[in-house]
Length: 207
Image (cartoon, rainbow, N blue to C red; front, top):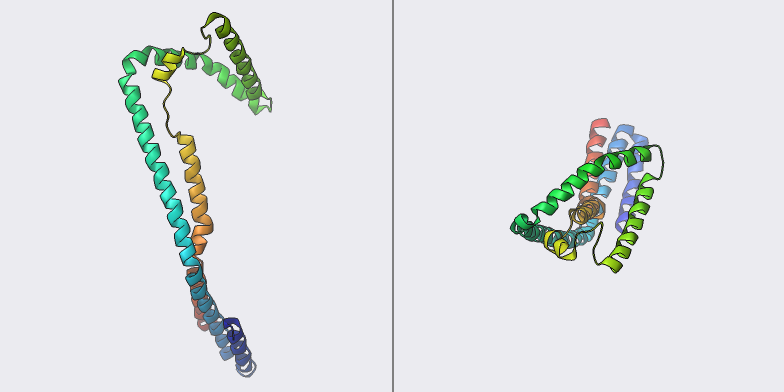
């Protein structure tokens, strides 16, 4: 006989005191329902706890790998930037000045977007055209008009690293996994047992 069948039989038995002594019957029903939840919670915990632990272990191992790669690659790139700061400073300064000059345009584009105008699309199209023009100039004149030469980009800007946006995206996915299904698998049975205990307690208090 299954566990649910046993508790169904017990419930039928407690229907007798419900009729004879209502208060005692409510207590007995609450106790039986609470015990049923507790036993089901124990079974659920034994079944789902290993799955949750395995899932959590896998996610944590990947998290540690991402964290290690993020810290190491960004440290290496920071060291590279510091070692090249003298030769690259002038280019960083030019970029900073360019950013300041472009700031009013960026603000204007943002304001237009608030009025539901496709300003960012216009900006993207403009720079796409500039890329095409830059490529045309480079093919004929062998120099860029909107990019630094490849040697400067390689020395001052290019560095293989795990970007913060990618790392933050994985952290978000890890948190979502912890919320569902890891937490439910690890503690779903315990939660059901606790609910059963409260049902028993409320049966006596409110009975």
